[in-house]
Image (spheres, rainbow, N blue to C red):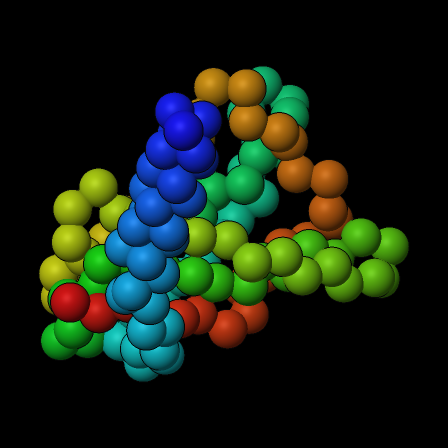
Length: 121
């Protein structure tokens, strides 16, 4: 009987956790007032990626998702990247994504940004 109680308790807590996590889905949409740009910059002879983001529009932005396109030997490779600003990104704000210790170097010959989506607040 004790084993059955633990089993049901585990199922109940898991289902409650899943219901609370999946109840609100993020609404990603395009924001014409947001600009994300990237640059390949060299530091100590090693190439690193620097990401800039600026809000020209009137929207307050909570999260950013963008396509990073790396071109190596004429072949393009696209990956999705996410930016979570430390605070809400208000109109006229401009920031760079901080580089983390141990961040990999850029292996692509050229980098650019594709489509950009945001979650507005």
